Image (cartoon, rainbow, N blue to C red; front, top):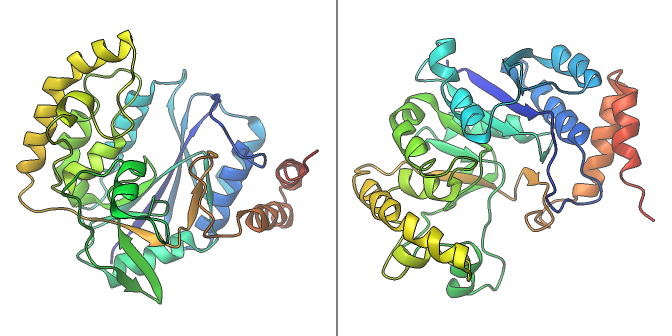
Length: 315
């Protein structure tokens, strides 16, 4: 039987991204814990990158087990590599599925049950996502290509259905995704290649394109990158000169992907990436925030529940 491993990647710090007013790390954690608790057979791991708030630990320990990455926070690439190599270190089977979940997502309560259903019902699908940027109703192919930085030859495969839920082939997602471990390990060189030449980021969009066998750059995109990528400044020109050979190498790697490993996203989405530009309107997320706060309170974590609910109040 396929074992589902749910890995929550938390970081004690914060950044300056544009967040919706109800965002908090407490909300993301509680929504994950609530959804994970619905899957009694799942292996739940909280992977903490550096110190986190003390009042988060009781909830983590109530739902799963806690693994500390390091005493001091690791960088983005180092912490991602640590997570990607967990299956090997833990001895997880190649037939299992691992779900990596970042700490700035709001998860629907049914997210992991839907994933478990899809893993069983859609055995040929190697990668799954809860959040993905799907074309909007009435949006033209060119509008979608520019908005979502799609390569010219991107053609989504037909939708699939699991337990009456639609899963749609999508070009990419973020570092929050699920994968069949055998396929993930086969594709690890792609993940590592998309970390170069950067030190503090990785190309999550290109990672997904490459393992799906989609060549990301064509023509002048080898110089300018995908739509919206080029920065019109002296720094942008220098960046372009540095990245050109890496883009050629990424194209070559995509062409060597003889068997595309497709990525499917729940449609409508079952998680919101809590940045203002990425929250889709396909779920009632504000109602979900209140439900998560109530769940935390009911489970004996009233302090977290109050903190979550307080963010719903706006001036």
